[in-house]
Length: 583
Image 1 (spheres, rainbow, N blue to C red):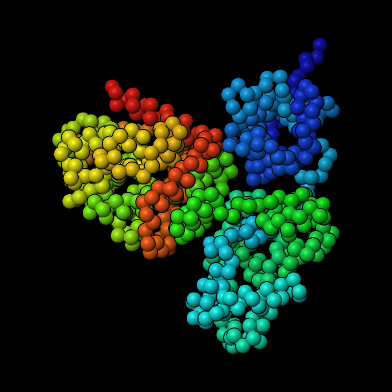
Image 2: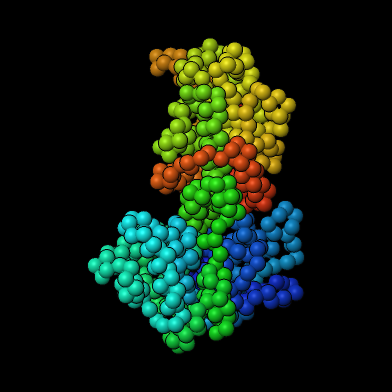
């Protein structure tokens, strides 16, 4: 009697997944949801769009389908279908507790479509690369300032507009017209041309999230007057891409370039930021358009603009567009740093500068651990140029505020100046006020909390605050975005090593540790950029800063699901810390 040996299907691989087109079917009802389901190499789902199926990854022998927040909605395994075909199947579990349906199985069956073999096309400017200055005319204004040729920017723009759409032209044609108009000599035109190209180069940076979508065989189609070699260099050195480039003045705009391109390539979809040229144009020739709006101002950047802080808006936009991570949970946390936490720290720093002037403070004491990032901003060379007093990072905790040991008092006083601001990121202020009153330091040590609990409003004379927000809705998220791998302060000791603070370790999991590390790296990148930003000539009023901060923090509720991993971990860590403090 021959034994029947069960054949186990092979585990899925990236190569197998990304080299096929699938039918997306829901069993047992055999409902076909999509016939063009694709696993994109970037870790995104393509050819199909739904919030519940946005990303994917491989976990051992399973494929996890993730929602737009990075939470698994289906864990699929390979199985053998009729005829020995390999397919993927898994029970739909839903992104929320109890949302799944054990009777519903999601199946991905390979089909005969060649969609996976088709390429993508991409616009370049404001799709794959962006300008720091946002407005392209700022390039001409910068050349005018640096060259000293009055009226250059306006005339340069008018000359180009006089031939746009009327003839094919390049940068040399524009400068020939400027010479013909008598604005510049031929020698000056050559110099200005080189200056314009240098200014363009310096202001351009990659939009990493979109660059990650580009596959090796994809093509780039750009309506641009700049020299082909220069644009190709942008693609290669700014984006790290070697893809084929199609360049014309307005080939997409006037639909002239598509027939030639489509004769050579089977294009599945086109990514671009221009509604007329990239969206409507691609649709008219039967290509699926993918509108890219990421380079536009975000809500936070608009708020900074309206608060009279455009330089910070530009710096935050530059940071935001440089963010990409294959794991959506990490990407979401980094984006929240750029859209909420770092802008809030900027506003808070401007607020602290004004409080320091009012209190005549010569020292700022920043509280560990919530201020671990903010402290570095307060001591940055950028804010030093605003006249910010010297800051010291104070290892402090609720335990040390309440214990009242002479060792901690000595540590605190050793770090103080004549007049001090005691600054914390979030909190009720109760422990800080207890400390100040117990040591009779009310005239020398002023507590200041960026986002305080509403309880602080009961005694506004005891501390300063920029915002009042509840814990679960707001402060827990801000604490999580400012989490540190440093241990919490447990005791102050004096021994052979002098005065020092003994800390207890945190117990964050691997994902949170990676998020904290990458967030710190991102923050470090921002501080480098911030060094090149000029501080505002006139400080916004505290009322303006409060209104801007309110607008930025108001975005937190819509981020709840995206930030679930960090607030969950932070909540557990706080519970452990409180338990240890109570023992």
